Structures are given as C-alpha cells and as structure tokens.
Amino acid sequence: MNGIMPYAAVRPYQASPGNHEAYGTQNGGNFTQFYYRYRALAEYAGKNSGSNSNFWYSFETPLIHWLAFTAETWTMSADQISTQLAFANADLAKVDRTKTPFVVAFAHKSFQMDQTTQSLFDFLVNNNVDFLITGHWHQYTRFPSIDSRSNPVVIDTACLSSDNTTYTNCKYPIINVVGAPGDRELNPRSCSEAYQINCSGNYGYGYLQAVNASHLHVTWHTTVPVSGSPDPKFGDDFWIVKTN
Image (cartoon, rainbow, N blue to C red; front, side, top):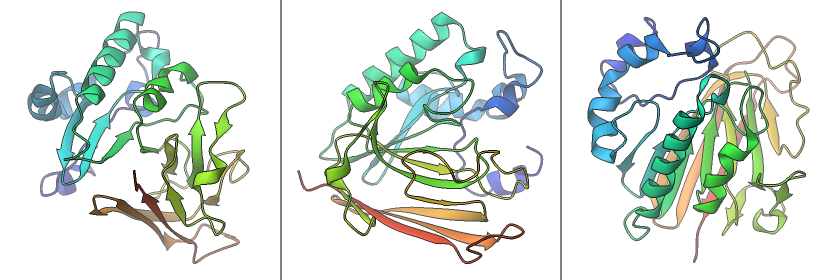
C-alpha cells in the first residue's frame, strides 16, 4: 500500500478489499489496514451513497453508476453479508438509467473464484448490472455474459458478435478479470478457465471509456510479457452496446 500512495495522492483511486487485506485476520477478520488507510472512501463515497462504509459503496461518473462491494465472504459474518446485499439492492434500485445508462460493479473476486460464495453475486443479475471488474487471479481474462445464479451457469451467447468484439443488449453481466498489473505469481490454472474468450498472463493495464449513452469501450494492453508468453503483444479490445 505504501507503493500505491504516490499515485493515489494525485489521481482518483477507488478501492475494494480482497484476501490480501484480510491475511492474519481469518474467521471474522477486520481488515484493519484497509479500514484505516482507505477511510476517506467511507467519509465521502460511502457517506454520499448511504453505506457509510469503505467496504461497499457507490459513486457516479458521466454515464456510469459504479458499485464497489466485498466478495471475501470467508471473513464476513452473516450480518455483514446481509447488510452489504441490502445496500447493493437498494442502491441499484435507485439508479437513473437515463442519466447513467451503464452500471459497472467491481470487487476483488468473481463468483467462480476461491473463498467466496457464488450466491453473493445473484444481485448483479437481478439488478441488470452490465459489467463486473475483478482481480484475484494474476492474469487477464474476459468472459461472456454470464448468469451465475445456477449451476451450471447460463451464457447469453446471442449477445456476443461472431468476432468476439461486441456485446449487444446482453441479459447478464460481462466479467473481466484484470489481475495482471505486475505480480509474477500467475494463476495456477492459467488460461484454462471455462467459457473464457480472451486470456493472457502478460503484465498490463486497461482503459474503460463511456463513449456515449449506448457504447462502452474497453481495451487492454500488455506492458511486459511474462517469460515464455505465447503472445507477447497480447491486447484486447471490445465494446458493450445497449440499444434498448
């Protein structure tokens, strides 16, 4: 976290806690470092959105309503999970889609990752969230539009173009794992996940741009390819389009 401070001091920086923030605090961990170092999130975004928390909160930028939440259910009590879900459902129910047509959520984990609970993510589908950004796996992975409320999951195959570059009027959230900022410890399963569309272990960074009320543009760029990378110049580029 000390390494992040010079950047966080001069740029907007919204955070969500993950398993590393809970190390040493299992079985009811209190995330002490995260709680105090990111207390401004609770004082501003948390207060403004009504959560008064830096573990779950929301904010808005032009055309996008953002929701941060915590997926580390292995450290959370039943009351904490219930409080978070109540906030998320109430917050998303109030979204004005004429003002912010896109809803983007972010958390450290997605439903198929370890030490979380699949049913936690039901609220994303129930509230028509468009896009979920996560980390945890030390790689980049893009998934299709997934309904994770059942096992096996349901994929909206019809909303993705044949060249895999455009999602149009998808029924379920599109999931993007962007956990490759520079950690040399790669996901043990690497690029072998079910349903994945594009994947790379290269270090990199991405951009998300709300171009207009109907088009969201996402790009991913390699900075340093991992040793032996099969695609040292890997990049990804796709659109999320809403016409209704």
